Length: 204
Image (cartoon, one colour):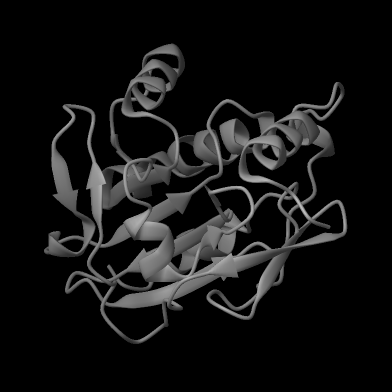
């Protein structure tokens, strides 16, 4: 399936926003695919190639410059001292990404207070902050990869034809080492947030 970046992105967003695609009907992916060059995710069964160097469990999270809500550059690899759950979504303006990020915040409030929650997407920082205000979310750091795609390329999570990020969850320990990774095989499915949170608890 050949898709140009602009048309493909619109197609993806449209598919994820299909009427009736509500929380109680969203499938949860139990498996994972490998990130990086030579691998792919699917959208309704159609393969979409991933690009970049693959993030790996057992090694430090790669350096990547993202933009925070104050429009300042942030190196995501510099954070240390807390276990982090990094929630990676294509766009917060779709129901699946919205549900995934709500799960991150609401599924285990006690854990949410004990770890650092981070959401990364290609959305502009303005859109990320708008979502946070509408959802009344205050304990999540939102980082945008829209400017250079550093995070996507340095972790092998860039959906190349769309210039969007693959749906994924990464858990890092207090030293910034990746200890859990799920790259969701089918973009329209949710990640297994229970498994990610269990991994985070094991690092506390």
